[in-house]
Image: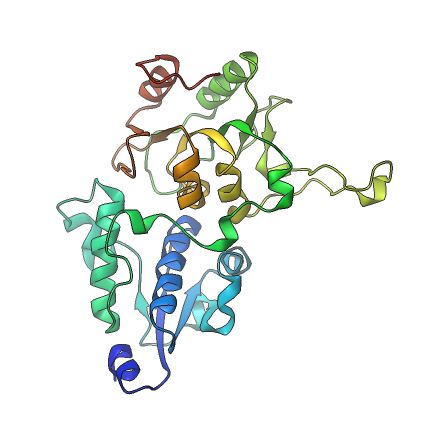
Length: 294
């Protein structure tokens, strides 16, 4: 099979086929890579095969690419499609820096690119920050003003850490009682903490109930936009966290508190990684010279 790189060198349109058999968060990282790959190679087309229920979510991250990055159901993948999960070929488990998650991903994308016959478009940890224009906050997100805490209290799907919903609900309640404006990604039972699974934007037509937006789940791309107007992000390393790791939020968010028993994120010195929830909560309530409150 002719490599994509050789096809581009001869001026022909080349196509790469990759598939992601795992969760939505994994798919977002893979979509970031494929988007950067298409940007770096104008004559390249990428075909990405995922679970059918992920297709519309992922398409929101790459609206500008059109047919250059095509999303298809996982079962439709051709035989030559390459598995782009980080532990394909045992890469993650054998990587010496697997705990440094973004750095490991940089090396994985170099490995994946070698299998695809292209040069990796991601050469540094900083380039792992998502930079799709779709993650810039739109008018509805900007109209929310500022959020004190975006809490990613959704359960992990790959055993990243122990998860007890009541622990997160207790933390959210304490934040609300301090007068903090909190948005969560899973229901907390606390009325004043808005949840992205049932989000209602203010009506643009005053007095007309028919024009009010009905409460509905926010797509992942919108959760990433919420991070760009948040002062603090605290949460589990799970799907809804991944779009928050974008270049606009990395500059804006004052404190990141990420729960993961195995992996760590180091994009800047405002990232605090915790293996246990108790450590995360203690770090939030302990000043340590970095006051996360007003």
